[in-house]
Length: 202
Image (tube, rainbow, N blue to C red; front, top):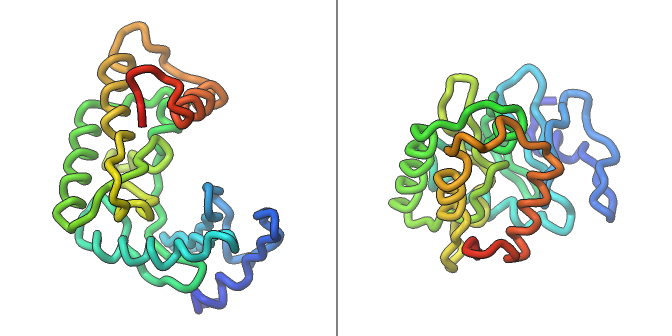
């Protein structure tokens, strides 16, 4: 099945946003707050299919990805429709995975992220909602960023600034654990979202 739109239609999601079925040429690789992500088998492309209540995000994210084309830190976009986009499939670990598995996040990685953000701002965007799950260190040790749907919001987002602070204040210290259990990391993220961490307000 070569037509992306037809392929997206095979993804069945119920009213409770549970994944029911999808074509055998798709491999389910992730679930986010608004969409399911699949690798299109035998390709280096990923299809993001949005929940029925979030389908409007598809057009917004597609337009932002188009603005970012030519910046090597963001995937290329190949197709989009009323409830899906098709972008590069990224091989590697998210920063979340790195902290859980003990892969070292180096200062050079932060410098790359900073550069990616600065390049996005030159496109008239406001990079926002930047967190550990939407930044990858690829198998070639390069930075890639995904989930750009909020890059046109107007309000100032503190998330990246706070991540940098936490990196310098805690992660770089000798006492920081080599690995953190995913449950604990999720709890920290939840607490942050509630604005319950002093000096780390959103």
